[in-house]
Image (tube, helix red, strand yellow):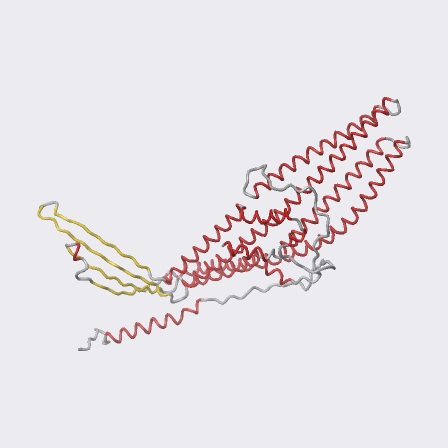
Length: 474
């Protein structure tokens, strides 16, 4: 075969070799655009400012340690039926599909078509002519600089972050369920105590009225006793409204209409709360899904920045097509014609736009770094605050119990002294009010301690069994 030379003195084989060398050089430069991820520097505390001196830590399925079958069943049900969690699951699936689309860019794009037409001159008439054609084409973009890889990585990181968002939703949902469950118990307990107080107020009013008819007391004492009873009944009505609202919130939590609830606890648990170890490591926060999501999105932001830079580098696209045409549809593929081609785009010529776009993506990554640090430090503060509140509420419980004992004793003494005529009715009624206030404060403290237990559980990163369950359902 004779050697064919171009006008520049190179053979066709030499040109192919030069093209292959150029493509190889471009491919070798590809990894230079990928930026390795380095976790931002953060400062972790050596120890928490407030720690409890007792016990061993456990945050897995923490609610089961209360030995409350109704609470266990409620949390299992809410994880299966809640709308917020269902929406979070849909978002996870959407993010996974977006990641699949990004991966699909590495697969050659294939298209095919069949055309058939008839034409005829409108000016001169004459016979019509038919034309038929069929074509198949394939195109593939060579990822020279890692742009497609960076876009794929960003989509994958975002999908993983969305899974962490779903786990965070589940953790928050468990906490909300436990809090509403205990709030229902608290309100029922308060209503029971309120009915007892109303009964005491009625007996007091009856006793005062008997004394009034006997001339032992004035109308002032009767008015005080009536006011005391009316005040207790008004407080009871307010508690009933709070219970209705809490019951409706509970029903909606389970994707049900207001008013339908499956449980109605009557009393707050009065046992010892689960212990917290004094040596909790800060590394335990690594299980928090919001922190994991923040770091995953940080990595996605870095990948997006790489993709933005790489998008202004030359792009090499390889194409191939095959097809044929004929006046007869059956002979379209009788004489097929094939072609191969390569295209090189040069977007870096838009230098100013490239510079600005790159700076925007880099600023987004810098913002993500700051956001990750802020999320981590807020998580550390959440743990420290929850541990400090645990100690504070435990001390308040001890003092409030002593206050209630004193209030009960004072009420009994004032009752005896009033019936003996030693003190006025108002002193006895005030003693009753102090006893009621002490009972309410102790119940509120118990509810606050239970809420604090949820806060510690959430601050420490939730429950590993929830993550396993969501992974099984996904």
